[in-house]
Amino acid sequence: MAQPDASKQSSDDQILREIADKERSLQEELARTQAEAARLVEQAQREADEIRARARAQLGREAADAAAAATAEAQKVTAEILERAGAEAKAIRARAQERVSRAVEAVVREVLGDRV
Image 1 (cartoon, rainbow, N blue to C red):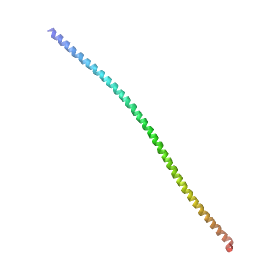
Image 2 (image 1 turned 90 degrees about the vertical axis):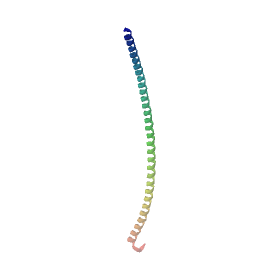
Image 3 (image 1 turned 90 degrees about the horizontal axis):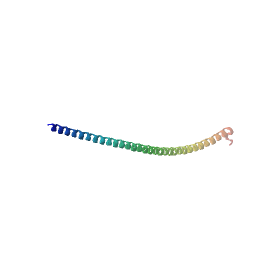
């Protein structure tokens, strides 16, 4: 009867060794998987950083383009306003000159009477 106990003990030991081997194998696979996951996360982070950097650069270019367009539009509007103001000033000077001429005539008539 000692043999069945020894055989059973040997069988139990074999099962425990297989379980331990399987556990080690699973732990090694888990460690490899975790390392791969960490590498993938780092790679994804680098890619995300690059995407953000490209987006910031693109935003900067677009902002500069928009600022240049706004400046050009402002300069155009300013030129138009100055042109209209110059035309108005010229018209006002012409009307003022005409009024000065009429005022001079009125003063001369008043001072000299009908003698002119």
